[in-house]
Image (cartoon, rainbow, N blue to C red):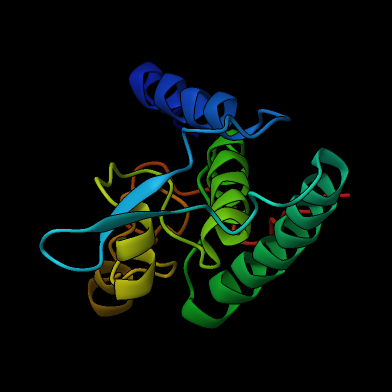
Length: 160
């Protein structure tokens, strides 16, 4: 069994750290959208009006849903999780966070200048177009048999 390169593990851990904060900073989830060429408005994220307790419950529910989706997806597509199970755990956590904040499971492993626009576009919503068309998951959530980091086919993730 191969290990995941250290740079990748650290990158995934930074995603986990960035998505597990218990509070919603008042300005970090504001995105600027233009309504006309001369006027603009700000839209809050989907979870902006939730209390921390409500948000935690929503994230937990989304985490269970994304875990169930991921388990079903690997069964239906003959893909597998990474041998280092911290990778799919962090990616699924990021997908769940985006499902709560954006309303869609936007890939957490990419940078977006406008996350809401990307979520509406759907190209990078999991499973993303590259995964559906070419079985290429840059998050290393769904791996094909020929990938050096592929894990055991019988593993299914569980979150409680």
